[in-house]
Length: 122
Figure 1 (spheres, one colour):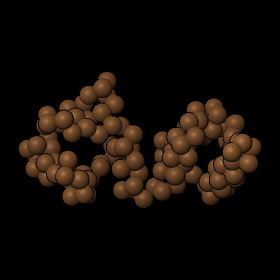
Figure 2: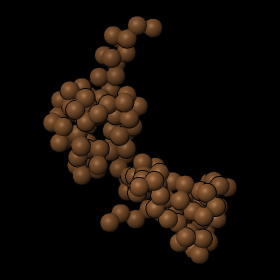
Figure 3: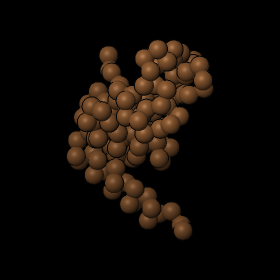
């Protein structure tokens, strides 16, 4: 189980300020078929943002950067595999945080971006 600390979110965002109150915080419900947390007053956090918060708080910048690279280019697991070389399963493990993303893979992602940018007409 992964714990996510919501204190910083409540401090930074007036929308989530009510989360400072335990009675309000515990009124969260799972919505959107398990993909969102929602509070009675309409505040919502989707599963991707919760995962990012967990990775940030766990110091997993490697996984967070990998997820953002994959998402920013709209790459499926298979497409990310084709782009940088590890197996689809390994890409899935990087994305989920089950394995640390090696520096060589992070560099391959950057190299892929540079190579891709050269082939896309302006």
